[in-house]
Length: 283
Image 1 (cartoon, rainbow, N blue to C red):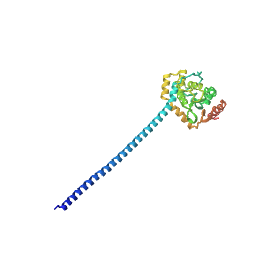
Image 2: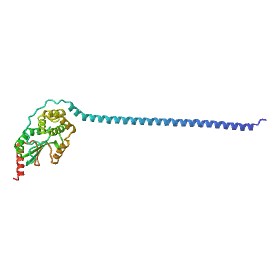
Image 3: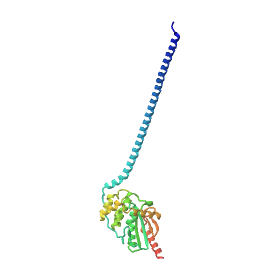
C-alpha cells in the first residue's frame, strides 16, 4: 500500500522550496531594476550638474572677455590722442620778435616791490586772452611795469579753474619749462602768435617742441622737463589761487586783490591801476 501521506508532505515541502526560490528571484529581479533606475537617475542629475557648471563657466568667460574688451577700448581712447599728436607734423610756425619785459623773472615781470600787483589768469587757447596779450598788455608794460609802478604775473588758468583742454595744459607746462631757461615770455608770445582756435592742434607735442626750438631753448633740458611734468605742481598752485579768489572765466585779473574780468580795453585797466596807486599812496 502506497504511503500517500508521506509523499504529500514531501510534495508540500518541495512546493514551498520552489515558491521560496521564485520569491527570492523575484526579489532580486525587482530590487535590481530599482537600483538600475536609481543609477540612471543619478547619472542624469550628474549630467545636468555638469552642464550647469559648463554653462556657468562659459558665462564667466564671456563676462571676462567683455570687461577686458571694454578696458582695451578705454585705453585705446586715452592713448590715441597722444599718439596722434606725437605722429602729427609740426607744420608752419609763426615766428615772433621778442617784446620788452622789464625785470622778467620766470612768469612775472617788473619790480616785486611795486605798489600795484597784477595777476593775470589766462589760457593759451582763449581768444580773448590772445586779444589782451596783443593789444592791452604792451601798453601796461610800457606805462606801468617799465616805470616800476606795477608788478605783473601770468598764471595759466581755465574757465572755472580748469584748462580748456589737454593742449592748454601742455602749453602751460611748456611755457614753464621755457621759463626754467629764462624764456618764459618769449614762449608765451610764440604760443599766442600761433593760436588759431581751441583744441584744433595748435599745441600738439610736436608743435610745442618746434616753438621751443624757434626761440633757442636747450632741447635736451626742455624735453626732460616736459617728460617729468616738472611744473605740474606750480600749474595746480595757480589754479588753486584763482579758485580761492573766485576767478571764473579767462582772462581775469586781480589788481591788488580786486577782480577784473574779461579782455577789457586799456582805458579800464588804466583807471583801475591809477585807483590802486592812489590807494597805495594813501591819497
